[in-house]
Image 1: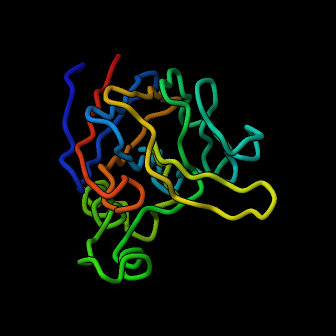
Image 2: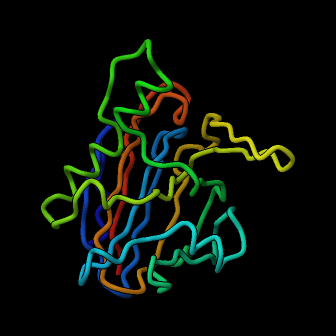
Length: 196
C-alpha cells in the first residue's frame, strides 16, 4: 500500500504497521502539525516513551537517524528521512482541557486527544493510555537558560515529510492537529502513506 491517505483538518486515524514496514507523514499544504503515537500491537501496554527516548538518544531534538523507544526500553521506530528536522516530543496531545486553559475565548474542541481516543478504541486502547505524542512539524522552542517553552507557528513548507521504519508490529495513531497556536491559527489536512 503506497497510496497517500488524507486526514482531514482537526481529525485523526489509527492503522497497523508491520515490523519492517515504513510509513511517511506529509504536510501537503504547509504549517500543519500532526500528533503521532505508537503502541505495540501484540501488547498495547507497551507504548512509546518520550522519557526513555530522550534518555537513550541523548537529545530532545529528534530527526533523521534517531530512534523512538518504548516504555519497556525497546526500539519502536527509526526516523529514516526527515525533510524539516524540527518536531516536538515534550507536549501532550491537545484536548478539551487545552482549549479551556489556553483558548477561553474559542469554542472548545475535543482536540487530538479526543480524536486519538476515538480512533484507537477499536484496538482496545483507552484514552488514559495515550502517551505524550511525537508532534510532527511542531515548533516548540526551549529557552536553554530559563527552561521556558513556547509554541510558535510551524516552519514546514508544502510537501515536507518524515518517514518512520517500524521495529515491531505497531498500532499507530495519527492526527491533523486541532490547536490554534500549534498550527499558526488555521487548520489543514495531513497526508500519510504506508510503504513496504
